[in-house]
Length: 392
Ligand code: TGC
Ligand code: FAD
Image (cartoon, rainbow, N blue to C red):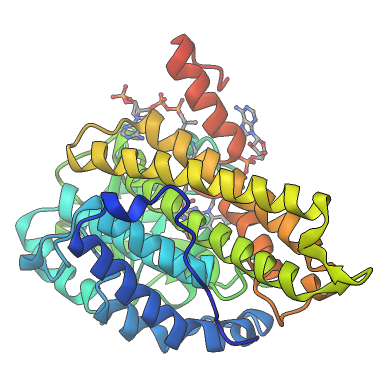
């Protein structure tokens, strides 16, 4: 890949709304991405390998648990800093941002929010430092958009639980040290359990041949009579609302993250349009190419405004599931359209790994599907405005 020449687009002077801390966090993350992600990511994506060496760097910049209090090893930042961090990391690659989303919002968040003090002390500092990597098991082979139908289950055996079932499409499963797994008890109530790598009967086969998120590792979680100590059950919340609550936090991070991917595509296409000469002038001088660029910067600016306001609401504890869902849907759709247009603007060069656009575009095909598909998020907004669920 060419040198990372990224320049930030701030059409509506959003920087004026950010605090010094926000800008510091954003700029430090951007420098780290330029130094530690951009030079290597294309090769890792082409070879379908997770860049394991980035784990320590992610921990060092505070990307594991940005909003978890510092007494548990987190960075103790606000929600806008968390969002800006995800934006910068996804500007590098959606797969690297995925690792942060999973570790922070899908593993640390449930342990912090639904766990007891002993569980917090035992796991959170080691997750924040990257010593432990976690994954989140909700989706099953036959229950994706409809996780409430899950069949993974556990039985109370007196001194332990016995866990059986399987999860599919789990980010980071092949090398996780622990998994936060959602399963039904004998009454059919959903609970979260912490499953550890060394537990007998627990395996994590990798899913191969992905055309998307190639620098992120995905796999299954298989539970064959796994004995789970009773102290590994998350005691403070049960029911489908527990895993869905974690998704609120991860979807919020994605809404910011994909702005980074869109910015990178726009920035690359803008630079290319000024350098590439056809018919004796830069292609940026043709109206059809200007239309694409004008629409890109407009959509990025709208998404920035949407997420900034959402961040304010989240800081105040007022952001609703439906508001977060709208931002996730809108911003991923926006980023995917920008990636497709930017790819075309680079002509043949757009399909090569010399530029980041095609990788972003393929990554975003997963991002539009995971954490709730585009259509499921449309139905969440539909239900919110009509009061009528249309899921079944
Ligand atoms: P429904 O009846 O609507 O809700 C069941 C209960 O949950 C409550 N609830 C929530 N609570 C907290 N936060 C939320 N976001 C909540 N949404 C709903 C709800 O109030 C209800 O509570 P109660 O007390 O009345 O029981 O549930 P439903 O079965 O009709 O399903 C609704 C639907 C379709 C919206 C939901 O299930 C859904 O969001 N489906 C999409 C599934 C999804 O997003 N899966 C993501 C898996 S994880 C992942 O993809 C990680 S990618 C990782 C990476 O970044 O790499
Ligand atoms: P399905 O639910 O089968 O949906 C198929 C199609 O039907 C979609 O277009 C959907 O929108 C549509 N559809 C479904 N229901 C309705 C309806 N009621 N009305 C209208 N249309 C509908 N999950 C985890 O638990 N943990 C992870 O770490 C994780 N990481 C992932 C990483 C990757 C790379 C991918 C691709 C997925 C990951 N997932 C993870 C799973 C992800 O959340 C699911 O793929 C997603 O929720 C959709 O489920 P599904 O793939 O089974 O599709």
